[in-house]
Image (tube, rainbow, N blue to C red):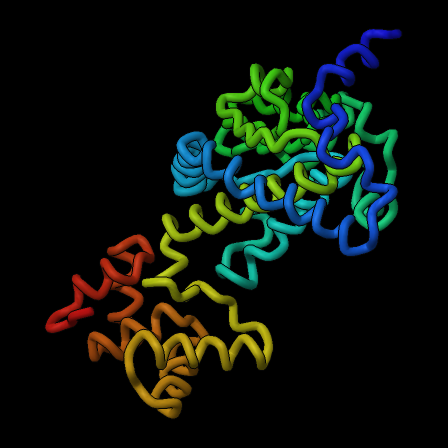
Length: 308
């Protein structure tokens, strides 16, 4: 047995699940129940690492406020999940598409067609991050269920080389990535229903963590007011109507007032809300938001005779 094989056999994600040994003999409903029972464990395991997730968010927010970026890096399912999280942030929170980005081993084509060998190339991560013009303000967020993927390890090494912040997301406690990164998030979800199929519980855990990190980061960056996504980018009819609904909900105004305010604010929902609640014009609303670093509830407190 070679060294790689020895390493793999020690991984929690590669061990057999004693609860599903007879899954191939179960009825359809029986198989589904087994999968569901194992999936229920995932949120619990993620909950156990919230203190570390909090450290990661604080690192990301601090660097993004200075102009840095969050760069997800991974291979296979892990890399695809990073890209999925990244591409949803611009329309949801109104951030620039290059502020949160995903890099996948094997390039964009590997998203729709598996390119498994790409994960074995550590040097490719160096090349891909150089192409992305990685700087010391950025955060390299490497994702790999096993925690031993060469491509993800290479990303962390490149991040350390340039002084970027580094985060690892793995599902194995003893993973080498955990030791390399500044912050290691390790929800140990245990053996998969189907041995080694980390697109299942490990993938679900990764998706939950990424959702938590990007959402919390955006909240801290002022992209949410109360629980309303006021940073939404009004780029189509559906999102325009959502923007008006958010304005109506936040201010108590009617549809026509929300529509007019959104037009006056050049489709910026936050500006429209401050205009209505504080009774000010566009310029004043933008000034209040700028003074409050884009955080709506602070801008409202700054506005004269403006309550929440």
